[in-house]
Image (tube, rainbow, N blue to C red; front, side):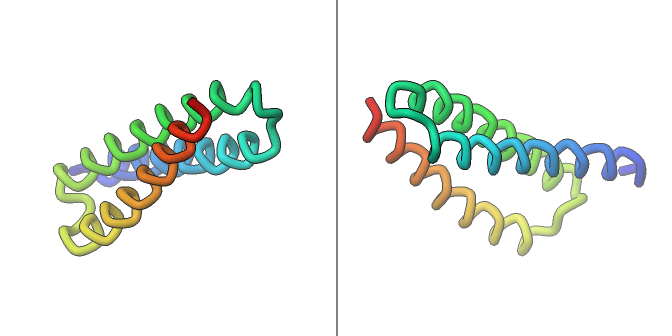
Length: 89
């Protein structure tokens, strides 16, 4: 994989991660009636994050051990977002 492609994908992942952080903070401060929309948006962004990390791993730009560690943490975070959605729904 060319170095510039890895850098571009890494930048994309970094930006999505920052978006997720911003949305989670925004949802935390939002009025109850606005939270569902924001958390749904967070959930979608989080799915993008998992998708692009998987691509990075499949392209062998992320080794198996790092991907396994990240996947475990992503699974935990995904469950938390899912629980948040369930609480709001």
